[in-house]
Length: 330
Image 1 (cartoon, rainbow, N blue to C red):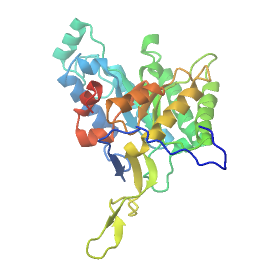
Image 2: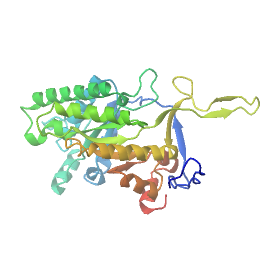
Image 3: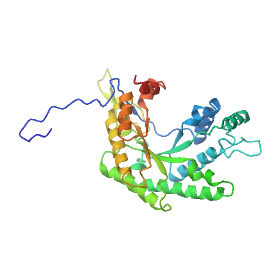
C-alpha cells in the first residue's frame, strides 16, 4: 500500500515465516576433527547395511573443506572411492583404489550384480562458508578466493583424468563421476551474489566451448556469523558468553528459524541470477535455513530449491523430523 510522508504508515502485518514450534540455534564449532577416511568408512558401513537398497537411490553428499590443494586432493580420493563402488574388493585380483576400505563384500557384490543395482552416487560439497574459523574468513565472499579453489580443483581433475586415461572408458571419466557443489554463506547485499556468479562464469569460460559449469549444485546457506548469546550470572548479574569457542568470545553462527527469511532470499536471488546465464542455469540449489515443518519446506521449493536441507530441527527433533515435515506434522 502506498502512502505519503504526511500520512500514517500502514500497520505492519505478521507474516507466517516460521513454524509455531520454531527454534533457533547458535554454534561455535569449526571444522570436523575427523579425516576424510573416517567419513568414507561411514559411507561403506551405510552401503553394507543396505546393499542396493535406499542408499543406492539417494545421492550421498560428502562435505569437505581446507586450502585449495587439500580440497582438490579430497576430490581425487572421493573419485577413486566412487570408481571402486561396485567393483570386486581387494584380494580378488582387481584392487579397490582406496584400500583398506572395502565398500562391499563378495556376497553383496554378487547380489547387486544379480539385481542390476547401481552403486550410490557420491557428491562433494566444498564448504567455503564456515564463519567460525579465526583468521580465515569464508572464501565464498570473495571472487578471487572462489576462483583459487575452483581452479585448483580443475587442475587436479585434468591430472587425474590424464593419469587414468589408460584404464578408464569415457563413461568412467572421473571428471563426471563425482559432482561438485559449493556451500555458501548467507549473502546480505547484491555485490556478494555478484562475486559468486562472476567467479562461476569466469571459471566456466576456461572450459571447452558449450560446456556447462562443473559446479552442479549450491547449498544455500550456511550459518550467519558474528552472532552472540549471553547468559546472566544469577549471583552477580553480570553477563558472559553462553557458548565456548576457539576464540573464547562465544561468537558463532546463527541458524534455525531466525535465518529462514534470509535463507529464502538467498535461494530466490541465486536461482534468478543463475537462470540468466546459459552455462549456469543447470546448477541446482539445496535450500537450507530454518526449515522445520511442511510449510517451510514448501517455501524453499517455491523460491527455487531443488532439495531442502534440515539442520537445527534435526538436532532438536531427531531423524523423525523428515517424515513429520513430509507428512505435514512438523
